[in-house]
Image (cartoon, rainbow, N blue to C red; front, side, top):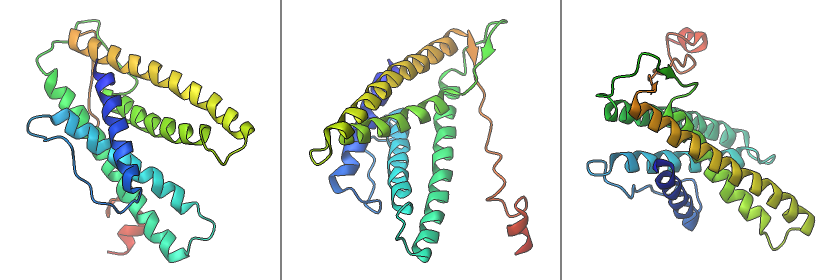
Length: 202
């Protein structure tokens, strides 16, 4: 199943990141895009999510200097752009893969594209990894560990459900029972013409 492979890649990415465990570490993709395109995209997608997860931790430091916070906010903005770009790349992969499938006359469109489901699966992998850390922390109280274990159990159940939903959607698309579209980003705040603050600086 697609989701089984995706979950393995996400786990590998998160474990790789935590070997050095810094947001500014160099990135190397474990998969060649010419021979393993979808794996290449999934690996890159989860790396972006993992770095951003830790950006979000850092910026919540109440002692962070304002200049450093502003720099980090810019990095989070850039990361968000990379994240949505990767979602489009992944959806484009599926559009190409299923381009010869003719949707049935009663085919329906899903509430979200495959790649946005995969985006949620990547974030869920990060939640599971870090909640497991909290559930097994030796310096935490039993109460803390027990509470985190309950949350971890729910997250693991969510991963099963989401994985099943993604696999079902891809199967439905492959059979023509569902069809998909890619809606290009309509973000306005990064656009010099659409953001009135940026426009006024021109």
